[in-house]
Image 1 (tube, rainbow, N blue to C red):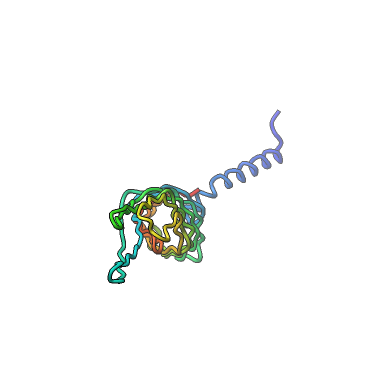
Image 2 (image 1 turned 90 degrees about the vertical axis):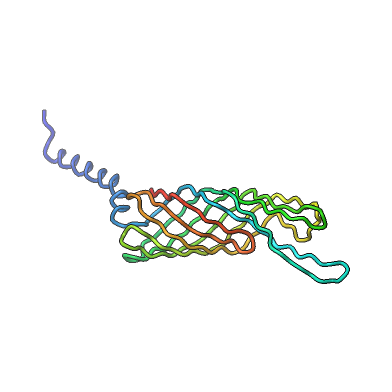
Length: 203
């Protein structure tokens, strides 16, 4: 026995609704670039630095200098972008970082070194879409790095945590409807610089 016409119409309606729910995210990502939730990896070079002042015991003169070191680092990011009109995007992002340089200096023949254990960043950003395939953005927020300290030199104010404001800028290019390629620079005041390549994946 065949199905009644009303039942067939109801089944068709349910099927169409389910299909629209499944296809909506992909259609949305295609129609509105750089919009919605994303997550992905980061890799690049990360510099850590510190500043130490030394006072000459005989003359009383004080001299200070930065010690810096670059090395490979990376991590993971997750965030959300919102379209504000056709071209403007605002968003928020958090990231966890690992690696980078281990700056080292000697004070009176004794060593002082900072070895980064991990870091975090929490930022907001605003950007402008160009030609529907590129996004240029600036960002700002707060972050910190946790260090393992070798303080044989007895340096005062040797802190395992260094936290401050974060600023940065970068660009993203759409590889397809879901995957972007990102290039960015980031600065954590009085602590770190970084150049990263990222792969945000939207979902």
